[in-house]
Image (cartoon, rainbow, N blue to C red; front, side, top):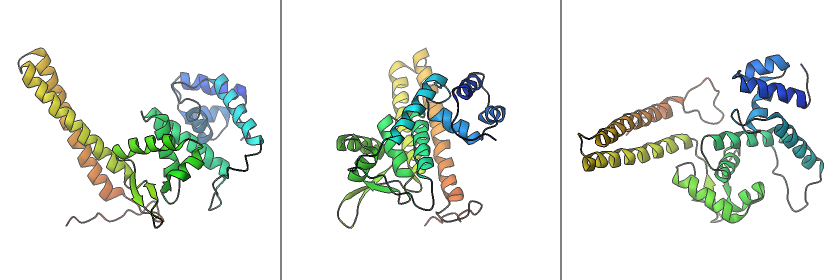
Length: 250
C-alpha cells in the first residue's frame, strides 16, 4: 500500500470518484490507499459537494509550506499527550471543523467547538481558545455566545475565578433538546397562523400540516435523545463494548 502524500493525479481520481458518487472505501480501494486518507482529504478540502483536485492540491502545498516555517516564539503549540501524533491531531481538528460547518454551524463556532471537543478536559478559558486558534477575544466571545445558546457548551468558574467554557459528555443531547424546544416554538407559531388564515383555506391547511409534522418529529427526537443518553452513554475509560447502566429517575 503506497504511503506519503497524495499526488495531484490521485486527487484528480478522488474528484472523479466523488463526482460519480462512489463511496470513500471504493475510491480508496482503487487508489490502494486507506479509507481514512480519502475521507480526511475530501472533508478538509470542501467536502463531497465542493471538492476540487486542483484547489485541494494547492491548499496542501500551502499547508506543507507553513509547517516548514519556524513557529513564532510567542506562540507555543499545545502539548500532545498519550503518544498522540501532533500532526494527526491537527488534521483531525480541521476535518471535524469542516464537518461541523457542513452541518450548518458557522466557521468560527465550528472551530471553537472542535477545539473544545478534542481536549481531554473538555474545557478551555477564553484566553486559551484565543491562543490555540490565533483569533481575537471578540471572535471567541461571539462564538461561545452562539454555542451556549444552542446548548453546545456551558460556562463555569474555575478555582481562579476564570470563566471556562465546557463541552459536557452529553453535549449533543443538550443540543438536540434545545433544537426540539425551538421546533416546538415553530409548531405553536404555525398553529397560530392557521387560526389567523382560516383552517379551511389552503394557507391555513398548509400551516396546520407543518405544525403536525414538526410536532411529531420534535416529540420523536426528544424521546430518542432521552433513550440514547440513558442506554448508550459511555464514560471515559469505559471499554466501547460496555454500556453504562441507565440512570434511574428519582
